[in-house]
Length: 210
Image (tube, rainbow, N blue to C red; front, side, top):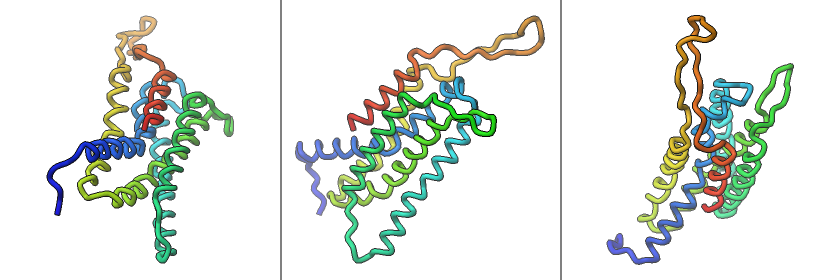
């Protein structure tokens, strides 16, 4: 029988669970929300979004491996708590490294690539994809009334970075009718209200608070 009346502890538990699940995709969604600013400085320019999307999908090898291990070792009880700690701790470290090294590039075959950003994004995608499996397993340890906290937390992972990007003023531009007397139209991006470093620090502190 489902309890209709919640106690204060129930509300606190629900809130804390939502904050934990908020850590699942906030980092990757934050990178995509910052793309209009990142592409202005990185050598891939707008192709960077395609690279990040591809790398994010490669992250699905982690939950696929986890499911395979569960199938091979059915007799063993799966405990998602250690995996959740690994996800949160490594995610925090990756976000911290991302704050300082996202601009670093490497020359490969005479062409620059945002290797630091792409590598860290890959690690974050591994963790985020795994969290979709481990968090779903973890929430089963609670009453069924708390299951919605999983969906609420994961839905906020895209809303919060998007709101921060809007406040920052990402992607605002205006067109110049002509350049040097020609008929070529130029595009000038407006300066963001705060820098990418400040935005990344805020995103890291957000992950840290979770």
